[in-house]
Length: 215
Image (cartoon, rainbow, N blue to C red; front, side):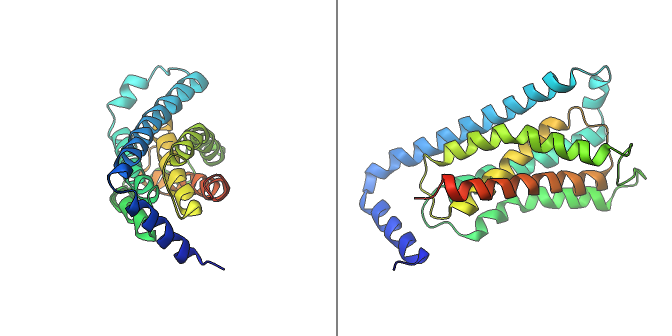
Protein backbone atom coordinates (compact mmCIF):
# COMPACT_ATOMS: atom_id res chain seq x y z
CA UNK A 1 0.00 0.00 0.00
CA UNK A 2 1.36 3.42 -0.93
CA UNK A 3 1.88 5.94 1.85
CA UNK A 4 1.05 9.63 1.60
CA UNK A 5 4.77 10.40 1.16
CA UNK A 6 4.98 7.89 -1.71
CA UNK A 7 2.03 9.57 -3.39
CA UNK A 8 3.61 13.01 -3.02
CA UNK A 9 6.89 11.77 -4.54
CA UNK A 10 5.02 10.21 -7.45
CA UNK A 11 3.09 13.43 -8.11
CA UNK A 12 6.26 15.53 -7.93
CA UNK A 13 7.95 13.17 -10.39
CA UNK A 14 5.02 13.37 -12.78
CA UNK A 15 5.04 17.16 -12.52
CA UNK A 16 8.78 17.21 -13.21
CA UNK A 17 8.43 14.94 -16.25
CA UNK A 18 5.94 17.37 -17.72
CA UNK A 19 8.80 19.84 -18.10
CA UNK A 20 7.99 23.11 -19.73
CA UNK A 21 4.46 21.94 -20.38
CA UNK A 22 3.76 22.22 -16.66
CA UNK A 23 4.35 25.99 -16.69
CA UNK A 24 1.06 26.84 -18.34
CA UNK A 25 -1.21 24.93 -15.87
CA UNK A 26 0.70 26.46 -12.94
CA UNK A 27 0.21 29.97 -14.24
CA UNK A 28 -3.42 29.16 -14.99
CA UNK A 29 -3.93 28.05 -11.38
CA UNK A 30 -2.37 31.24 -10.05
CA UNK A 31 -4.50 33.45 -12.28
CA UNK A 32 -7.59 31.49 -11.30
CA UNK A 33 -6.74 31.87 -7.61
CA UNK A 34 -6.18 35.62 -7.96
CA UNK A 35 -9.48 36.03 -9.79
CA UNK A 36 -11.30 33.91 -7.19
CA UNK A 37 -9.83 36.05 -4.39
CA UNK A 38 -10.89 39.31 -6.01
CA UNK A 39 -14.38 37.98 -6.70
CA UNK A 40 -14.60 36.61 -3.15
CA UNK A 41 -13.84 39.98 -1.56
CA UNK A 42 -16.22 41.78 -3.92
CA UNK A 43 -18.93 39.22 -3.14
CA UNK A 44 -18.44 39.60 0.61
CA UNK A 45 -18.62 43.41 0.41
CA UNK A 46 -21.80 43.28 -1.68
CA UNK A 47 -23.36 40.87 0.82
CA UNK A 48 -22.39 43.13 3.73
CA UNK A 49 -24.09 46.20 2.32
CA UNK A 50 -27.04 44.21 0.96
CA UNK A 51 -27.60 42.79 4.45
CA UNK A 52 -26.74 45.73 6.72
CA UNK A 53 -27.25 48.66 4.36
CA UNK A 54 -25.18 51.83 4.08
CA UNK A 55 -25.08 53.20 7.59
CA UNK A 56 -25.09 56.98 8.20
CA UNK A 57 -21.77 56.86 10.08
CA UNK A 58 -19.97 54.96 7.30
CA UNK A 59 -17.79 57.91 6.27
CA UNK A 60 -16.70 58.48 9.87
CA UNK A 61 -16.01 54.76 10.22
CA UNK A 62 -13.77 54.75 7.16
CA UNK A 63 -11.64 57.54 8.68
CA UNK A 64 -11.33 55.92 12.12
CA UNK A 65 -8.16 54.29 13.45
CA UNK A 66 -10.01 51.17 14.74
CA UNK A 67 -11.38 50.53 11.24
CA UNK A 68 -7.91 50.94 9.76
CA UNK A 69 -6.56 48.40 12.26
CA UNK A 70 -9.32 45.90 11.46
CA UNK A 71 -9.12 46.20 7.70
CA UNK A 72 -5.30 46.19 7.55
CA UNK A 73 -5.05 43.20 9.91
CA UNK A 74 -7.60 41.20 7.92
CA UNK A 75 -6.09 42.09 4.55
CA UNK A 76 -2.63 41.13 5.82
CA UNK A 77 -4.04 37.77 6.89
CA UNK A 78 -5.72 37.47 3.51
CA UNK A 79 -2.42 38.27 1.81
CA UNK A 80 -0.71 35.53 3.78
CA UNK A 81 -3.67 33.28 3.06
CA UNK A 82 -3.45 33.68 -0.70
CA UNK A 83 0.27 32.88 -0.59
CA UNK A 84 -0.47 29.81 1.54
CA UNK A 85 -3.23 28.66 -0.82
CA UNK A 86 -0.94 29.24 -3.80
CA UNK A 87 1.72 27.12 -2.12
CA UNK A 88 -0.52 24.22 -1.09
CA UNK A 89 -2.05 24.18 -4.55
CA UNK A 90 1.20 22.70 -5.87
CA UNK A 91 2.74 19.24 -5.26
CA UNK A 92 4.81 18.61 -2.15
CA UNK A 93 3.64 21.51 0.03
CA UNK A 94 4.33 21.28 3.74
CA UNK A 95 2.86 22.61 6.97
CA UNK A 96 5.22 25.60 6.87
CA UNK A 97 2.90 27.06 4.20
CA UNK A 98 0.80 28.45 7.05
CA UNK A 99 3.82 30.41 8.34
CA UNK A 100 2.90 33.01 5.73
CA UNK A 101 0.07 34.06 8.04
CA UNK A 102 2.43 35.22 10.79
CA UNK A 103 2.64 38.94 9.83
CA UNK A 104 -1.14 39.35 9.97
CA UNK A 105 -1.36 37.37 13.21
CA UNK A 106 1.42 39.51 14.71
CA UNK A 107 -0.49 42.70 13.85
CA UNK A 108 -3.59 41.35 15.60
CA UNK A 109 -1.54 40.54 18.71
CA UNK A 110 0.03 44.01 18.70
CA UNK A 111 -3.45 45.55 18.46
CA UNK A 112 -4.65 43.45 21.40
CA UNK A 113 -1.59 44.18 23.53
CA UNK A 114 -1.74 47.93 22.90
CA UNK A 115 -5.52 48.25 23.27
CA UNK A 116 -6.21 51.09 25.70
CA UNK A 117 -9.85 51.59 24.69
CA UNK A 118 -11.35 49.72 27.67
CA UNK A 119 -13.74 48.28 25.11
CA UNK A 120 -15.43 45.17 26.61
CA UNK A 121 -14.25 41.83 25.28
CA UNK A 122 -17.87 40.74 24.89
CA UNK A 123 -18.74 43.80 22.80
CA UNK A 124 -21.22 46.64 23.15
CA UNK A 125 -24.24 44.40 23.68
CA UNK A 126 -25.00 40.91 24.89
CA UNK A 127 -25.54 39.69 21.34
CA UNK A 128 -22.36 41.26 19.92
CA UNK A 129 -20.23 38.12 19.98
CA UNK A 130 -22.70 35.61 18.47
CA UNK A 131 -23.96 38.11 15.89
CA UNK A 132 -20.44 39.08 14.83
CA UNK A 133 -19.26 35.47 14.64
CA UNK A 134 -22.30 34.39 12.66
CA UNK A 135 -22.05 37.33 10.26
CA UNK A 136 -18.34 36.77 9.55
CA UNK A 137 -18.74 33.03 9.07
CA UNK A 138 -21.73 33.40 6.74
CA UNK A 139 -20.00 36.13 4.73
CA UNK A 140 -17.06 33.76 4.24
CA UNK A 141 -18.97 30.79 2.82
CA UNK A 142 -19.29 32.07 -0.75
CA UNK A 143 -15.59 33.08 -0.82
CA UNK A 144 -14.69 29.62 0.53
CA UNK A 145 -16.59 27.93 -2.29
CA UNK A 146 -14.86 30.11 -4.90
CA UNK A 147 -11.38 29.52 -3.48
CA UNK A 148 -11.84 25.76 -3.19
CA UNK A 149 -13.07 25.76 -6.79
CA UNK A 150 -9.85 27.58 -7.75
CA UNK A 151 -7.80 25.00 -5.82
CA UNK A 152 -9.34 22.25 -7.91
CA UNK A 153 -7.41 23.66 -10.88
CA UNK A 154 -4.14 23.14 -8.98
CA UNK A 155 -2.35 19.99 -7.83
CA UNK A 156 -2.51 19.56 -4.08
CA UNK A 157 -1.22 16.52 -2.21
CA UNK A 158 -2.65 17.66 1.13
CA UNK A 159 -6.36 18.30 0.56
CA UNK A 160 -7.27 18.96 4.19
CA UNK A 161 -4.43 21.47 4.59
CA UNK A 162 -5.34 23.10 1.29
CA UNK A 163 -8.94 23.39 2.46
CA UNK A 164 -7.80 24.88 5.76
CA UNK A 165 -5.68 27.47 3.94
CA UNK A 166 -8.66 28.28 1.73
CA UNK A 167 -10.76 28.69 4.88
CA UNK A 168 -8.27 31.12 6.39
CA UNK A 169 -8.21 33.20 3.21
CA UNK A 170 -12.00 33.15 2.91
CA UNK A 171 -12.45 33.92 6.61
CA UNK A 172 -10.07 36.88 6.45
CA UNK A 173 -11.88 38.27 3.40
CA UNK A 174 -15.27 37.84 5.07
CA UNK A 175 -14.00 39.51 8.25
CA UNK A 176 -12.45 42.38 6.24
CA UNK A 177 -15.80 42.97 4.55
CA UNK A 178 -17.63 42.83 7.89
CA UNK A 179 -15.28 45.49 9.29
CA UNK A 180 -17.17 48.08 7.22
CA UNK A 181 -20.25 47.69 9.43
CA UNK A 182 -18.79 46.31 12.68
CA UNK A 183 -19.28 48.64 15.66
CA UNK A 184 -17.04 46.66 18.02
CA UNK A 185 -13.71 48.45 17.76
CA UNK A 186 -11.58 47.15 20.64
CA UNK A 187 -8.23 45.70 19.63
CA UNK A 188 -8.71 42.78 22.01
CA UNK A 189 -12.22 42.13 20.68
CA UNK A 190 -10.91 42.03 17.12
CA UNK A 191 -7.94 39.80 17.97
CA UNK A 192 -10.10 37.27 19.82
CA UNK A 193 -13.42 37.09 17.99
CA UNK A 194 -12.29 37.83 14.44
CA UNK A 195 -9.65 35.13 14.88
CA UNK A 196 -12.23 32.66 16.18
CA UNK A 197 -14.50 33.37 13.21
CA UNK A 198 -11.59 32.73 10.84
CA UNK A 199 -10.73 29.52 12.73
CA UNK A 200 -14.33 28.31 12.28
CA UNK A 201 -14.15 28.92 8.53
CA UNK A 202 -10.72 27.23 8.48
CA UNK A 203 -12.26 24.12 10.08
CA UNK A 204 -15.08 24.11 7.54
CA UNK A 205 -12.52 24.52 4.76
CA UNK A 206 -10.43 21.60 6.03
CA UNK A 207 -13.52 19.40 6.22
CA UNK A 208 -14.71 20.32 2.72
CA UNK A 209 -11.23 20.33 1.22
CA UNK A 210 -10.48 16.82 2.45
CA UNK A 211 -13.31 15.59 0.26
CA UNK A 212 -13.50 18.10 -2.58
CA UNK A 213 -9.74 18.24 -3.25
CA UNK A 214 -8.88 14.56 -2.79
CA UNK A 215 -7.46 12.71 -5.78
